[in-house]
Image (cartoon, rainbow over all chains, first blue to last red; front, side):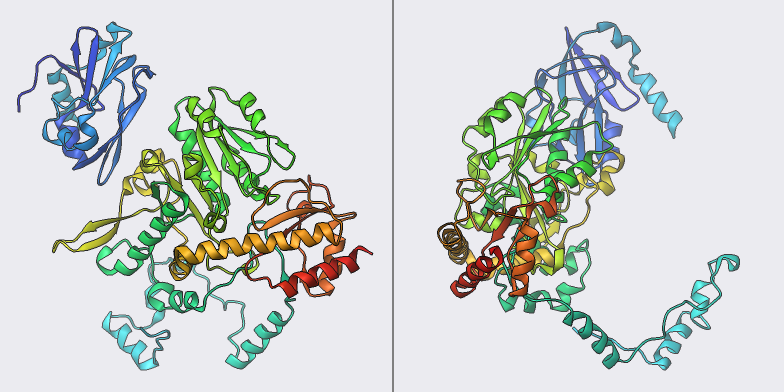
Length: 127
Length: 447
C-alpha cells in the first residue's frame, strides 16, 4: 500500500494531509484493521470549531465505537459525504478516504505530529 | 413446552455423578470455607399448596374492587383474552434476551412488530424495543438531545407534564452539568409565548406532553419551527391511545416521540410494570438508547431478524455510552403488540373515539348536573380535571364507599397542586350506567 510521504500521524491513529491551509484527516491502516468492518462514520457539522485533541466524531464497526480526535485546531470546512453510503471505503483505502477537513487556525501545531516512521516505531514499541 | 419439570432424587444423583460431584455441597467447593454460611437459613421449610392458596386468597380478598375512573398515566382499558393467551406461552413468558438470533426468531419478530407499530402510531421513522416506562423514555429522550448538541446543556420542560416525569428527570440529571428549566402553564396548557422567551443557544430540547397532566390537549402550532430554528429538538410525550384519533407527534414535527403503552393490553397492576416507547426521526437513529431489532436475510436468503446497531449500546460503548439501558420491557411490550395486532388500525380508531366520546358524556354531566367547572376550558381526550368545592381526597373517600374510584386528586402526585383538583378518566370500558352512578355518587358526596 502506497503511503503518501506528506502524511503526519497521531498516536491515536489519525493521519493528517495538509493542503495549503486545510488539513484532511483520516485513520491509519492499523486503525481500520483493529476496528474491523466499519459500518458507520458519523460526519461532523460544517463550521463547527475544535481544539487540537478534542473529540470530533466517531467511527462505528460491528464490535466497537471509536472516537476520532482533531490532530490540530480549526474549523470544519469539508466532510467526506461518500462515507455516508459507503463507510467501508475507510477499510479499503484508509489513506485516501479522508473523514473531514479542517481550516487550520494554528499551523504550528503540525510540528507536534509524528512522521510516518515515528508512527510506525510507536506501533512496534507498543506490541 | 412443559410449564414444570420435576426432578427425582435418583435423577439428581445421576446428574451429580455425571459431573463427578459427591453431593450438592461439592458445587460450592470454590467458595472459601471461612466465608461460607454454616447455619440454617431462617425461613420456613414450605407450606402445602392449599395453605399457600388460602394465604394468597386471603390477601387478595383485602383488595377493594371498584369501578375505576382512575387515570394519570395508568388506565382501566379492555384487554382481549388473546393477550394473556399469547404472552402466557412459555416460549415468550420465560425467554431471555434474544442475543442468539438462530433460536429467537419469534421473540425478535415480535419486537420488530412492536417497533413498527410505534413508528406508525407516531408518524416517525425509527423506534426501539421499548424502555422501562414513559417517564424513563422522557428522560432518555432529553439525554439524547443533550448528547446530540455540542454546546447545549439546558432542557426546557412544560409545567404540564406528569409529576413523575419531573421527578425522574431530576434524578437522571442530578449529578450532570444539565439545567432543567420549567416552562409555565397558562389556562391549563403550556404557555407557548414563554417558550419563545426561554429559548437560547444553550437549549438542547423542549419536552412537552399532550394530552397533558390535566388531561387537556395542547396546541403546538409553530413550536417545532421555533425550536428547529434554534437547532433544538422537540420532544412530545403522548398517551398512545390518543393517537387513534388525534394528531401524532410526527405530524407536529417532533424529533422524538415518547410515552407509555400501558393502555395497550396491560392491566393497571397496582402501578406497574408498564412500557416506555421512544420513536425518532431517521437522523437520530444512531443516538436512540436501548435495544433495536432489525430485519435482514439469513444465509438461505430468507427474511430473518436480529438485534442490530449494537455499537450504540452500553456494553460496547462502555464509558462513552450515552445511556445505560441495554434491556427492554419484553413481555409487557409483547402484550401491547398483541393488543394492537388484535384490534388493528380500525379497531384502535374506534376504541380511541369511544374513549373521547364517553369522557365528554361524563364531563357534560359534571358541568350540567353537578354544576362543577373544569379546571380550564380546553379540549381533552379521555380525562379531565374537575374543580371541586372542597378537598378532592374527601370526595373520593366518600365515593369509594359507593364502589367508585372517582379519580386521582392532583395533589396526591404533586403537593404543589391545589387540593380541590380531581383528575377523572373515562375509558371505552366504562358504561353509561357506571357514569350515571358516578354522578349520583358525587352528588351525594358533595352534600
